[in-house]
Each structure stands twice: as structure tokens, then as C-alpha cells.
Image (cartoon, one colour):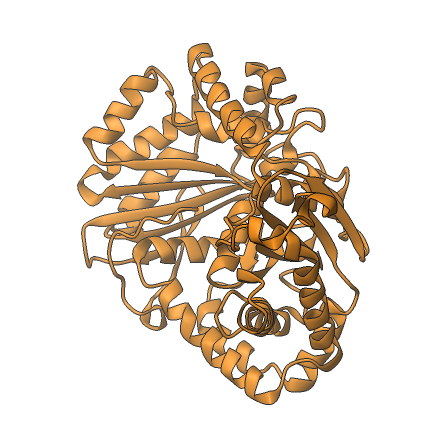
Length: 464
């Protein structure tokens, strides 16, 4: 699941569905030369050669993700991602991790709705060993029983904590409300009921079906020669199956609003999530929706929702909204946290402002200022080797052209006020799906002086 938004809006996606470690600055993206590298073995990658510092950053993704979990066992992909760096080949978990730590190699995997993603970071001089460890992790994961039970226990502990976390409950209920029994509606980290039932054979079957070359995307940024990189990519990924065995995932449109769900939880701060059907990445209106989202609730202190809910009424510490898109659907989703006795007032204020935006759209000044921000913010989003690798992999998985960086500003500039107004009505004019987690209306009706002032909400966890 991808996102568009700023500030707290980014946290929303991290909850609903990567920590990026910045090693060093890279040249301005405007001057970046992106190469389409094809190895002798047919492995394709986007590659930016940068000798600023002796570091190599690689991001890669296999199609599949949590949507490939068995319907009765959500959490298989997440358990696989948590175990791939816990021993491989003839190296047990302890030895594998010692090898990484000795060379300061950073290897990790993350499950998303439609992708099993991975990151690899290393000093140039340790490239051979780093790529060798990744090859073992992908081709010969051990899934030793002791390691499986240790990681399973950690996941279950996290799920137990989340069972009383209002943000986690809101995110989970929101996806359930939006997608029902579709794979996108299932908890990507599993449940307290499903995780104990996952067997080692389930993990091996997931790897067999998902970890394959046919839908693999790779981006590399760093201090390495193209010929050397091509050799390492062939050695690392060349031994994988040529084709995966993915189950088909149907397209789905989020449930038609307005709909509302309430989850009772005895906490002083009520969490509210709201949203509805969004626009897919290749929708002609996508960029107009992106710019509109920034104006309406993109997480900045100048957004309409922030001014209306926080500045004018003091109902919440923050309120933000993001665009979220997957391979088979799209959402817009927002979040806020407020005092229990003011939750209803907060929801009314959000609904009113979104309805007003849908009816009238942005002003010309708002559109111009948002365009300027959207163009300038990309400089910061791609200003390190790790950020650049992550951003370019996102473009790949979104099936954007290799020169999208160069074209993006002109696409932003092409959005007209009439288009923005039409998209505002299309996207935000249908009402909201709303999830409220907190005290019941009766409990929230206690005297206000017994209720603490609203505090900053933790971004609601849920899904990729």
C-alpha cells in the first residue's frame, strides 16, 4: 500500500499497511542519471552510480505481499518476512546475524499488501558478503523450529498489545469496513487466532509461490561499477524460480459511504479514522487528487482540516489525511485523536469541511501554493542514497517510466483549477467511512473536567 501525504499522514500509512536509514547525501535528483541495467542472466534493475561515499543501497520487491496469505491464515507473509534474516543455508540464526553485524550489513524484509519488500545496505568493500547473505536468505531460508517459535511469540505479544491499542483497533476496523472479506480487509500481521496455526510448511509454500524472478523489481544506488553489480545480481537472484505461483487477487472498490463503526474501549482519548474510495496510481485524475489531498488534509499545518479542527476549534492536537493505493484498489484515509466528550463534535467538523471542499474545491491560490510545495518536497524525499533507492523502487512498483522524475513537475503544473474542482467532488463528495474507538457515548458524557486534554494521536496501525 502506498501513500501520499505529509507529516502525520505518512505515519498513517506506516500504520495501515519503512524505516529508511540515510547513509549519505546524493546529488540532486534533477542531475541523477538512472540507468536501466540488464544483467547477462536477464535480471533488470534501475541503477544510480554514486561515488560520493563508499556505500551501496539496494531496495527490491516481489509481487505478492500479505494479499497472498491463505484466507484462513492471515499473517503468513509477515511471519516469513520476519524470519528470512534468521538463518539460511548452513548458517543458523546466531551465525547469520553475527556475519551481518561484523560487516555492518543491514538486511531486512517487510510485508506490504501487494509486495514482499527487502532492503540491503552495505559498505562497498563488503558487497560480496552482503549479496551472498541475501542470496542465502532468498534461496535457502532455514525456518528452524526454535526461530519460528521465538518470532511467533514476538508477533503474538505485539498483537496482544494491539488488542487494547485504540490506534491499532481503528486501523484494523477501518480496513474491515472498507474491504470486508477481500484480502485487503485481512490483518496483514495476522490475528491472535491465526498466527498460532501457521506451520513451517505454510512458510515454505509462501516462499515457493512469491519469491520468484518474474515480478521482481530492483533499485540500486551507490558506489559500485555496473559490471560488478550485474554479476552480483545474477548470483543473488539468478537461482530463484523463473515464475511465481500467485493466487489471483480481484479488483475491489471500498465500501460505499456513509458508514460508521464504533469499537468500545475505555481510554481517555478517542481515535477517529475516516476515509473512502480513492484513485489508483494510473488514474488520469491521480495528480489532481494528490494536490487536493495536500490542500485538504495532507498533514501540513496549512491544511484545511488542520485549521478547522485544531486552530479554530481546538478539538485535536492534529488531523491528517493520505492517499493510499494498492494494485487492486485505492483509498483516502485520515486520522485524528480527541477528548472522548468531544469526539462527536470533531467528526462533525471533519465531515463539514470535507463536504465544503467537495462542493467548492480549492481556490486558485491554494492550488498554486500546493503545486509549489509538491514540486519542492520531492527534493527532500530523494536527497539521500537510501531515500532515492526507496523512491525509485516505488516508481517501479507503480509501473511508472524510468524518466518519471524528470516529467513529474510538468505533470503537477498541468493540473488546472477546473480539474481540481471536479476531482474534489468525485473523491470527497460521497460521504465518509468512519471508525471511532473509545468510550461509549454514555461514558464520554461525564463532566469535562474529569477528562484530560487531547494529546497527540499515535498514527493508527493497520495494514502496506
